[in-house]
Structures are given as structure tokens and as C-alpha cells.
Amino acid sequence: MKITMDEVAKRAGVSKTTVSRIINGNFQHVHEDTKEKVLKIINELNYRPNALAKSLKQMKTNVIGIVLSNLQNPFWSSVLQGVEDTCHSNGYNLMICNSNDNSKLEQEHIEGLQMKQVDGIIVNPTMKNKQLFQSIIDREYPIIAINRKIEDVPLDTVVVDNIKGSELAMEHFIELGKSSIAIIVYPPDGISPREERLQGYKSALINHGHTINEKYILIVEEKKGAAKEEIKKALTSKEPPDAIFSTNNMMTLEILEGIKELGMSVPQDVSLIGYDETVWSKHLAPPLTTVNQPSYEMGKLAAEKLINLLNTKQKAEPKVTQLQPNLIIRESC
Image (cartoon, rainbow, N blue to C red; front, side, top):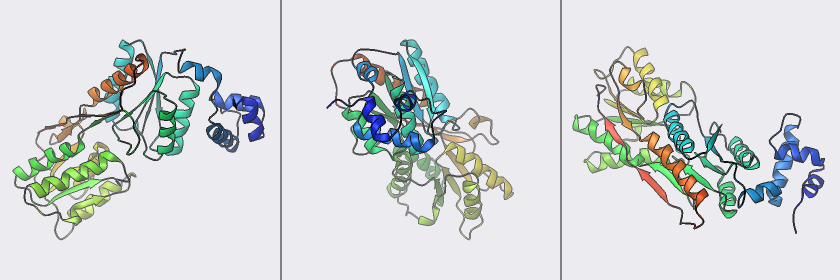
């Protein structure tokens, strides 16, 4: 049985006009509860407007959507540049959305992009919408994941080797004779880069004959000031670390602020390595040693893969493409 807009409106107890507004992303005059109810029914009935169904096989808008998790992180500026340059050189426009690591907002953005008939989507997933991504794959809609792997979902994915990145940082510390190395990380919660950076930290210690001391594994809430307070607590404990591995560049700034507030300095009192090279890393005092991710290349490759999906009739098996990081050594150790 073909599902129509009339059926959606009837099930939701609203007018066809309201359903049409929601389908076209016009939420201005629609109550939040009504929007959620209609979107839920659209999803349950797997209803797609005729124009969208046709666009998957016949029509092209030459627009690609990208949904990122945190546009405040400078890492994504470089990724976006790679995506945008590749889109532009291939005749595509880019529509950018920010989920703020909110799974509900992520779903709204993805459904909104589809309703706007973008040709395909690149997403840095929140990890809490597995069912949504599986349904997208089942409908053979072109989508690429970037930076994070979604376990048990067969999706083309472009990531960086986070285990290797952590091992590079740890090996540098160990070569310098550091023995009490702390790692500070946001809650892993199934988010692959965080889990893998923690895994690389542990494997490097074990491989070099060191024991893992749980008190040096600092897991902090992803909220402003949490990393700063945690590092101040660690550095004023009975057995403070002699080195700190920061797994996020926004976190690194808080760590430096905490060290400064204690009247301590890098690297005289404690060594520091940050994850992600940024435009400000070399301008800090002292210049910061960083694990550099090929962020531009990540964006470029993800866009190339998506455009290839759009232009090829033969479907290949989804795979995870893993890029390699490198360590930029400066003066913070």
C-alpha cells in the first residue's frame, strides 16, 4: 500500500498543510509537539514525498549535506575546507549543520536534509542513532560517516588511526623518561576516537614495560571548566603526574589555564602533549607538541567517497578508511 500525505495527516490528526510544512523544514508556525508527532509517524510509515523518492534515482540537486558534532572545535574548520574544496571542484554546493553532539538534533538535521532533497550526506555521528542510520542504509540513501565509527552498521567511514596517535604521544613521553603520565579524556560512551585514544595510551605503557595506574586516567565531563579543575586536582595530589596527554584541543586550553592558575609552568613542572594541530599550537608559550590529524585530507576523502557513491551504479561493500597521524614535536615536553 502506497503511503500518502493524506494518511500521514490523518494519523497525526493535523492538516495536510501542516504535514507539508514539516516535510519542507518550515517549522516556524508548527508547535514542537506537533512536529515531533508528525516526524515520528513519517518515520513509522516510512513515508517519503514523491519528489524525494524520484531524486534518489533520477533527479539531482547538486547539494551535499554535512552534519558535524561541534563546530566550535577548530579541528572541523580544516575538515570542512577539505569537504568544501572537493564539492566545489566537482560542481556541488555544501549545506552545513551542527548537531552539538545532540542525537535528537542530529536526527532532525538528517531528516531535514533529506526532505530538502540533498543528494547525499556526510555525518560525524553522535553514536545514539544506530536505528536511523540503518534505515538510511536500507533505503540505499548515499551517506558517509566521518571521524567516528558506528559499530555494527555497514557504513562507509573515514577516520584517523587514533590508537596510533596516542601511541606516538606516549612513546615520546617515555623516550624523555616520563614515568607518571596522565591522560585526560571526555567520557568514551561508545565514541570511537575517545575509546581508541585511551586504548593507545594503555597499549603504549604495556608495550614499554610500564604498569597502568588508574589514578592517572582522568575522565571528565564535557562541560566548560571540568578539565581545568580535574588537572588542578591531579597536579596538587600526593603523587602528581610528570606528564599530561590531552586528547582534545579544546581541553588542552583548559589544562594550560589550570597549570597557570597553580603557578606552575610547562615543561618545567609538567610536560604536555595535545591532540590535534591547530593554528595556535605553535604560538603558545612554549609551543605545543601535538598529535596531528590529516583533517583536510579526511574531509577531502569523505567528499570524494560520497561523490563517487552518487555517480556510480555499482555498489561496493562499505569499508572503513583509516588515515595516519603524525607527531609534531615542539617545546612543551
